Length: 115
Image (tube, rainbow, N blue to C red; front, side, top):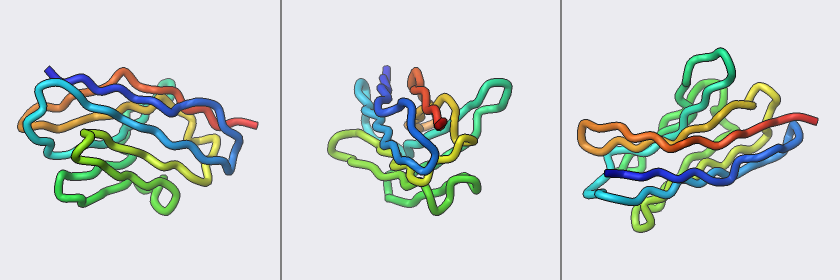
């Protein structure tokens, strides 16, 4: 069993920054990838950013140039640095880990961008 615990969400003004962390623990042998998804009320869950065990990254179009995903393999932790935040970035952010053919999800953390 794999557990993912997110932290770092909160309320921030437009133009501000937040850093999300996702710590993984449990029966981890090796990750294929870790990533962040977000879901606003009434919307589908969309990819924000993903990083593979080899360090390759991919971003959703709406966050390119503003968000940066990174990982610490030794700590089984992924980070999402979010800069130049906009009100439309407001959503529940979920961490996800892909291990083998399984995808695991954290409980999520709320990010609210508002003045």
